[in-house]
Structures are given as C-alpha cells and as structure tokens.
Length: 314
Image (tube, rainbow, N blue to C red):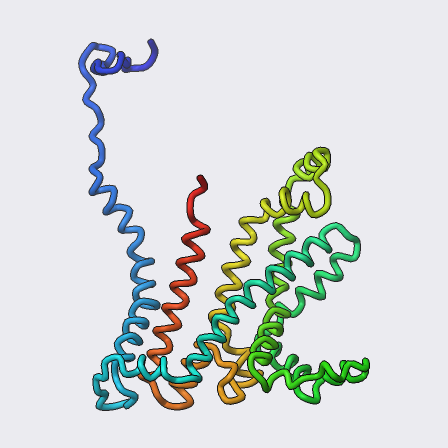
C-alpha cells in the first residue's frame, strides 16, 4: 500500500498510516450548491427582466385601457374584441402565418439545393457569391430593388412582355394574396444567402469516409443524399429553421418600404399592424393588444419548434 491512507473494503473505515480513523471531508449541502449556482444567474435574470419581461408586462397592462394618452379608462377585453372583429387585423394574422410558412420553406429549399449543387463544382464559388451578396443588403434596400421590379410598369412585367409572355404580367403588389406572396419571394431572395452558407458548412463537415462507405454500399444519387447526407445536416437545418422563423415573425422593413402594408392594409403582418394601430392611427390600446397577440404567436411557434428539436433522442 502506498500513500498516507489506505482504503478498506466497502463498509470499512478509512485509516491513516498510524491506524487512526480519517474523518471524511464534509460535503457541501445541496442548498449551498443551489445558492451558489443561483448567484451566477442573477445578472442574466436581471437583464432579461429589465429588457424583456417588464416591457411585455407594461404592454399587457396597457392593452386593457382605452386609446387615450391621458385619463386612460379601463376597458377590459374591449381592445381584443375590436381586434378580432377588424378584418384588416385578421388578414394581418393570416399574412403572418403565410410569412411563417414561406420564410421557412423557401430559404431552406433554395439554400439546401444551391449548396448541394455548388459544393463540388469549380464554378461553385461564383454562384455562391451571387446568391450570398443580397444577404449583405439591408431590408430597406431590398424593398427598393423589388419595388422597381414589381411595379405595374416595372422591370418584371416589361421583361415578360418583351419575351412574348405579356399574359403573365400582373399587378404584383395590388391584389391579395399575390402581393403577400411576392413580398415573401423578395424576402427569400435575401434570406437564402445565409441558408446557403450554413448548409455549405454542414456539407463540408461530413467526413469523406462516410461518403466513400455509402458509395461502396451502392448508395448513389438521391438515395445517398436522403439516407446519408441529409441526416448529417440535421443540426444545421435546426439553425436555419430557427433563423427563418425569427425573420418571418419580425418582418417589417421590407413590407413597410415596399407597400406600407397596402393597398387597403392587405399586406400587413402583425408587426406592421402593431405599428399602424399605435403610431399611424394613434390607438395605443389597440396597438398593445396586437403586440400581445404577436408575442403569443412567437412564444407558441418557438415552444412547438424547440420542444421538438430539444427532445432527447430515444
């Protein structure tokens, strides 16, 4: 035996070299450990409370009062009843759901397709640069570019007419739901760049041995992509979906600059309706009710998404 103490079998007492029993070191109580962990969380809790929770509680409280700026009166759920009976706000809720679907499916589908097609070709860098460049442009600049293209006499209609496809020319920004879909496409034009970058990182992180082993097993083409490559991109896909969800729910600048929510408020999302009710119509109570509903939509979408993605593997 070496060292100053010796350990006997289970149930026996530890003794030192002189045979005297060794007093075991006192273990820290569970409450002390919990308090120590809580101390490290205090700064984060204070910041979240000050910057997120308190403004939301103030907005929630304001949604139960009328639209007066002074001498506000309690109106209960009147703002919510008016909101859900307003066709413009109901259409903005529908537009928000369209944006959620469009901003998730288009960037993921286009980004993954472009990343796979340009990953192993010589001209891939040039193609990727052309796709990624719009991501460096602000949302307002993107709106200006697409306004030039989508106007009734804009570049898109002129191009279709010059190609003999004048029957396909439309008033892209004047009729619903075509105007909302056109804006979603404009948003995807910008957002696809970051999806391409992230999927390329995921593709280049796949070990070559995995691809070679799949080829030896006879997996080629679509079969290899479906059963070998795509499962390796699960982590990247989770990140891209999360970014796309955030972009869809906070869409504002492109819609406002491109059409200011019009015509007749037909392209508004909940974020634009909140701004319109609060600052244009000067109805802070109604705007607060829209903000609360938007927050609930964000929390519900985040909870469903994170609950599925963070579920431990069986």
